[in-house]
Length: 505
Image (tube, rainbow, N blue to C red):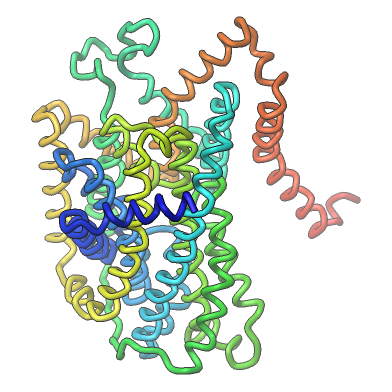
């Protein structure tokens, strides 16, 4: 009953005219930016982050929730119509959705993506409502050693899961950790790694890094490597599904929600695993004529499942973000930066210190889900018109928006130089397949992990044995080791089973 009362109080805050307006603007902007080719939710949130610098915090967080959801909804549109996924999770949607579009079934593909996102997002929001306070309650009992190892687990899992190479993921993480060390030492107050530049005394703004790595790097990468590609558009059909398509979609939505929700609750990083897993499950369960559509004319389950899994994952990812202060994706890392801009650190105490804000945010997720369903179905043709904007003009607008937003934070020319420098680094990382999420996560969590490690060592009277003498710490250490070693051991075992002749030669 306490949860229900708190949620009702959150709805009372979220449905105020001002907050409803911000939720609506966030949904529209997030969807509009999300449907633009090659732009995912992380880029959308990073681009729009400077907008709320002067906005009241509750309205700002509701606005970001709208952008967060809207960009996720919008990402499926370009995947289906243009075969241009804005993020890795949308790649799975593009596999079957684009084939459906080419065979005149774009409307059904877009409809199942929108409705599936609504179903999965609503169920996942209920999970956040029910379990986030419980997780926070237990998390309060954790001490500095456990918190340091939780952050180390986040570093390890995100770096290992994202990208094609664990080594590259770890390299990106260390870049982020290094950036996070710039500025004043938290304990001694001494400047470190500033190179004598006064503007670096307060460290590097997370907004600059986010906008530079995602928005500016995206524009530069397009100009350098993709500008000469010829794009094609697919014919649109009516936005509706047949009775048979409904029968095939509903079970796929429910199965995918069950797959995606647990992945969001744990710091395992990203939506790639649950979306690919959902696609594999739907393909395996399909029979007869339905199975033949996979990879040929496009199977609707191959769109319904991954889209639902994607939205279930990104919604329940708010549980580790709000209760532990651990982001598990690019977008939640940027949302963590948005919290910190207002002087709020997500974690176990958040449900006590900022209960009104948290419950208003959770209530806004329900509202945003309904808004997005109403927006997405009738406005599909409008988004298609937006996609006709020539990419050079489109990306020029994004670059202007990002530059003005970054400059507006401190009116500093140095920030612009830094923004473009970070953008160049982002281009190089993308060119050589270095994941960018570990950079943002390392930058945000690095200083916090450093502080927790120092506190833990102080508790242990200068001894690092504190990390192995406490049961919870020992369990977390074992999980970290398992994350690093198990995938390699399983891969080696699979190679031995598939190539037994190599053992005997």
